[in-house]
Image 1 (tube, rainbow, N blue to C red):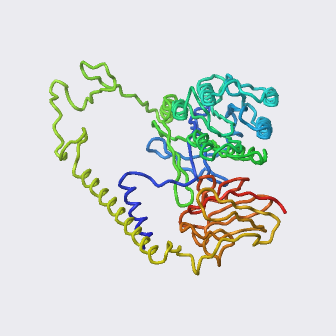
Image 2: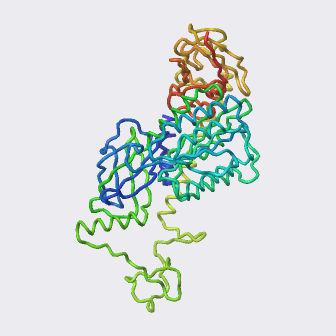
Image 3: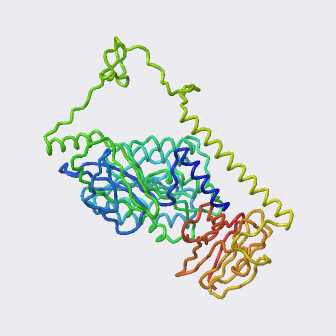
Length: 522
């Protein structure tokens, strides 16, 4: 009952605020919109993480307010006339020698598989950007990269690359930036993190960004997360965190698989015209959507197409500028009558009062009061919940167990408890009374507080559920997944929504307990 009350109040509050519930990890972004070569179809370049063999009926498209059918869905790299420019920025200086080799292997393999018509360029920190149609030339440049950078201003180099992709006539319609570094914090004297994100947001064209952090022993997880922030803000970009033991094939696979998520929608405008295109797709119980303003060229092409089909010519309305004003954004609506007879604007009878220049009506006031009531209810519910928890702790000397726990909590395990060939060590990070724990894993190991249901028992953390998370081992890969726990599972401070492959020295957090994980074969 308590959970239902929480959920109900939160949903109502979000609705009143006009927000929308997040769609989890699934994404859909419009990257570009243009007419085809014959001005018959509208073609939209779309990135989506929705898996499966997507068909035209999976997408819903509107031009303005009119629905427009999708006639074909094709992979971007297989669509004639659609090409990509890839610019590779390499921060070689802080990489270890192993990381330097991994970087070269990943980038040379990637350049070798880009499509016909695509162009590519590579630049070290401090160098000038350039694109080339000669892939062999770029591969040789990657293989001959020196270890030392020209300068230490990585952010300034990224800004230079963004500006080049945004403005260069060599750049193709779709633009991709791949940045490789350790992810470690740097003393940026020219452009700080906020300045980098601001300059990226100023780009007129969408630029997909991949960040590859080849972490060293000196790199902190939070620093690598900040390094990848620009990838998270780009349309279709991803942040990759790896280390010196990560196979180059795995890193390359993540980039390649993500590139395959870009598709071209062929859309029949029929008689629709408008200034905006919206695209949506169903994803489980939610709907993903995105919209993009149409360029003046596309709007004109749609109007010309309508005129050719119906004989109706769309005439743009020229706004009438107010007398004494040179501002075309200050028009007069002819329907309002002559300006000579126009007096002061009469007050709105629905306005109760004005505060900070905002006219407050009865509806706005009621909405504000309802929001305050909901916030107050949430605060009261939180205080009551904490009071019950405190009384339970005072009575039993510990926090109450989760609903899915039975029995008494025992000491954490130590030593091998599961037969297998993979020897895994969990080392506590931060404040924890838990000792380092090791065990062999055959195919799975369950972590939680209930000793009758799990193999790795975490005793002194009330935020850990009875059956909290499960680690599995298959085909040489260790993965972790959350088992519907109350407080969730994280890997390197990122929430686990689906099974995640683990890397050596990853930090796994269950409840408030963080464990560094290492393993080796028997």
